Image (tube, rainbow, N blue to C red; front, top):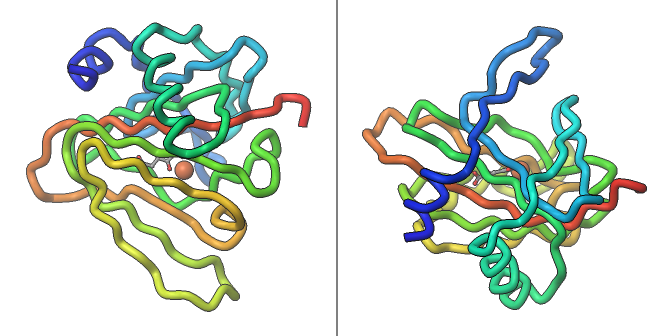
Length: 172
Ligand SMILES: O=C(O)CCC(=O)C(=O)O
Ligand SMILES: [Fe+2]
């Protein structure tokens, strides 16, 4: 029900990003919700949060209880098909602080989430199939030591919705 509601009712946008100096469209749809003060710079974009809706606020409370921490915003990503994706990156924007807790909820199609250590970090890369209803927590030095991605897949897959709950401090 939540997947259907969010897919239909969220004002999804396809945002341009600068990649190697070129303007390209992100290969996914996004939306950003949060407390009014929680503005966020993401890949050179300044995102003003949309106000919380009742279902998202309820979800925030449940995710806060599960993660044992507070969040003031959520980034929604809609991967319409296997051709939508997110490249390797770390969520290391200054407004997240040095060791952010990020709670990532998946709804819909199972997609493979990849983690690879940054150069100089002695660890093996990981692949995690994230199933509908799963909650992935990234915390401590995860962003400092690792990059993560959601690669494209040639398998026929339905839409996947991912919600990453974050605590941003715009003054940071
Ligand atoms: O879709 C995912 O599982 C990853 C999303 C992500 O890394 C992000 O929003 O920063
Ligand atoms: Fe991320």
